[in-house]
Image 1: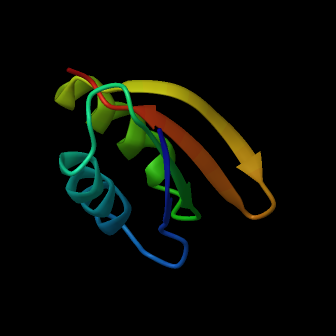
Image 2 (image 1 turned 120 degrees about the vertical axis):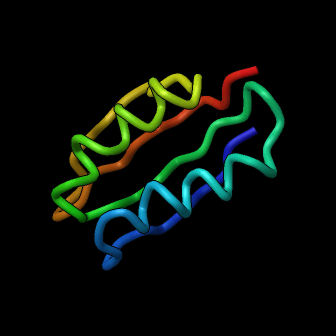
Length: 74
């Protein structure tokens, strides 16, 4: 199941913290699509996913932001 989180306008560490909180409510295998424009998120999101056991499916540029697709780990 796909879920969206708009984290634009938020600065480090808020995009990752909000993603973590949102992922806690999801089932394993669900996808969270995070839109963030914080330059630090480019480093923070992959690191968070690796540490928390989630899969970072893709990172794409979307206008002045990036879209991170995270699949919740089991």
